[in-house]
Image 1 (tube, rainbow, N blue to C red):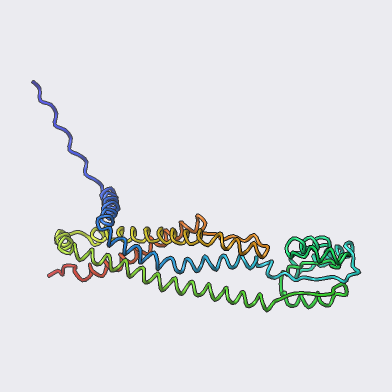
Image 2: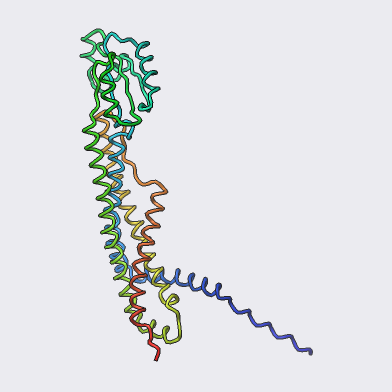
Length: 315
């Protein structure tokens, strides 16, 4: 019988293929280590989730408060009540003239009939209005400034057609100041609590490193690079971050569901259709990505420090 040709030896893996294989192995094995210690993992993820949920929740509250107070344009509106003898045609001509100014973004005209209907719907004054008889309301112009609103309000007060000009710039300025303060507070709390979450991940990974100290020492003696050794711990930190970000979003979602109906009822009592809004898909993805990066950084700092201390010294 003729001899069968020997099988060709398998081609060696390229450096890039080996690097990808180890990344895949580290990705899967780190997830297994997360589930191997459920109680410790739950504590770590829970602490991180609370640290992330606080600034995220405050940011969400500020976003809803901004919507509740009205858009920026609405909060800058100047109400110009015209003289009682000014009819709708004259008011429309005046609105067109004001709309052509460079310091005016838009002008909305509301007739006395529209104002009366709005009072009936929102104010609950139907019987009192019926008792008055004739419509006492003047034509109203809602002017949205495009520039200096205080200067524009002064100009509008000087119009001979204007009877009353309402512009609560001081209230809007106070609201803007509070919103700016809240935004700065979110940044400060986010930085502090984010640092706390980073330290929690770092401490958890440090304990895992200590448990595998002898294994790491053997790998170093065999010539394993620092990147090879630290890679599983980096993925471990990223898993902690992703899980904590997801838990924080779930907690905030449940809080939003619990508050949505009471807030809607309170807003309805003031004639508003306001409803709480949660995170959009883009925000959800950004939170998860940021939490994962935070966990990765925490693990990177700890493993880098450990490897610098334990790196063999050439003699």
